[in-house]
Length: 430
Ligand code: UDX
Image 1: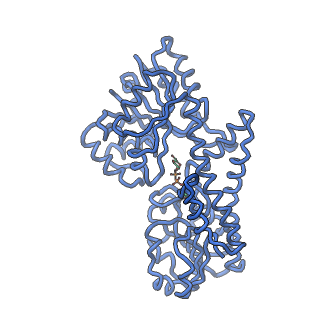
Image 2 (image 1 turned 90 degrees about the vertical axis):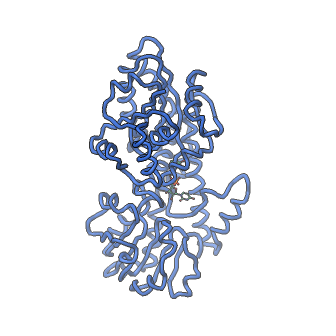
């Protein structure tokens, strides 16, 4: 079986490397020449723990090849995974121009029965759209379109690929279902086999529910701050209810990344387009959009709205640990808000600095490590919970800072550090 992956991004590259690791011959088509050159020379274009080793191992075994050659590969493929981007438009609608272009290109080149798999997160009805595009240039029905959404978390993508909770297969024929099950056979995980439309909405419902859980605990945290309660204890207690579950109840600066914000907005758009007012999704989206702004008010309160001649240290710019991705990152948003004051900002992130420099003003000091970022600062704001920030040498931190004040947006410390002479502020405690 020849498998072709179109797009070597966060989803496509993980899909290509892991399927090659299963023993399949995989061709990955990437049109970005710089990215393609790096891949051919064994370099992956983003940080993802464990991916580089698995990538190099399969590159060496020659089961994994990268190219920008489209026609020959498409016409000889048995299965094609579409893993191109579906970035959000301003109104929340998913931009399907890359999916449309790829579907059109595929339709001209497929020969013989081919399974075309939509792996990208796409709105309901996209499989139909791909089918119609393929039909335009194919009189005989020589293909099936399958919706097979992924649930990979950045920073845990390999684990999530190799140990998925479920495998979703949306298709219209047994033939296509059998081929997808053959590909994922080694995983031995539960399948949910359904029609394309149901598979497409499962992805949005899954992500939007997780975003709702996070936003709910963030809202409870705000209440806890005003009633003298402890949000971590509330989260632990409700998480012990088997119907709720403990995961995704960590309060923080709001969800970021390239998925949750985009997927919640897309779900709202799809609801509006299909005469369904998704009130909860709209409330989650609005609450999350406002969260960093409300945390900036906390910063103003702590500094008594005095920003002249003070330096503020931000630790953590990537949207979550174990990734270099700063898309929709609360750290970026907060740095921009503080950047509008006269305060000087110093930042450090273990992986996100290169991407942060593309997003933030040059007036910010990009430091080489957390202690350099802390030197002579009046306030430390912890935004991303990298493990190395959980084991700071607090006595050294206290000596380095001009004023030992910490705003811990991930509750990685506790008010015990007050005993070391720190002024400590956290989320969901007062
Ligand atoms: C998410 C989904 O988890 C994954 O299944 C899907 O395929 C892609 O989108 P990802 O965006 O990589 O994955 O990261 P995730 O770990 O889900 O975190 C998303 C955001 O929520 C991050 O900003 C994170 O900081 C935040 N978060 C997560 C919380 O604030 N609290 C939590 O308890 C969990």
